Amino acid sequence: MSQSIQRAADILEFVSIQPRTPSEVAAHLQVHRSTALRMLQTLSDTGLARRRNDGLYGAGYRLTGLAHLAHEQFDLAGVAKPHLSALGQSCSHTIHLAELQGRSIVYVDKIEQPGMVRLYSQIGQPVVLHTSGVSKAILAHQPAAVVDSMLDTCPFTGYTEATITSQDGFRNELDRVREQGWAADAGEYEDYVNCIAMPLRDAGGAVFASVSITSLKARADLDELLKLAPQLEEVTTSISKEIGWRP
Image (cartoon, rainbow, N blue to C red; front, side):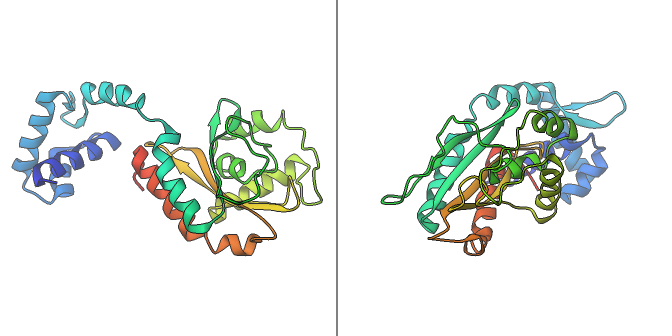
């Protein structure tokens, strides 16, 4: 990538986070203030940046419009598919992709390995909220109002001895997930199946989806799956960055 294009991209990302002075942009790029100002003026001429009345530079209206148009091109399953397929081939387990849609969390993709026992989950099917690793990974990072509205309609049916059957217990579980950075289904829907899951973030840093590695316990128990956590984190980070997230 040419230096000028890289600098322009850095400026747009920097001023999109919050409005900046030319001096702040210069310090960020480690260039002279006159160089930064010249680039800011060029970006303003194109509408990608904007000089405000207070003298600060922020995102331009054209950039906002382009972002809105481009958003329609992003199909989560399409973006994630290569990453999920590679993860599945690497670990030889089932990979799930789930997304928060309204007040439901829905499976939007599933990568199964040849010759393996098929699991109950289906693309387009809502997850069982209180038993699923993918739902925990998402809900642990949602605003309180979203969590409240979803849990208020959850029946907390007991499916196995490991199922969490109360709101308080589930909220405690979400606290653990938030602290440790990953979620698990420890045989909570089917006692012979377990998984680990991690969240996906959008360009603004909000969690909106998650990815899980799922296996029959006879093939890999939770301790074995947790050995794959670094691979799962690498995949979720890569997908999130491709969508636009920057740590």
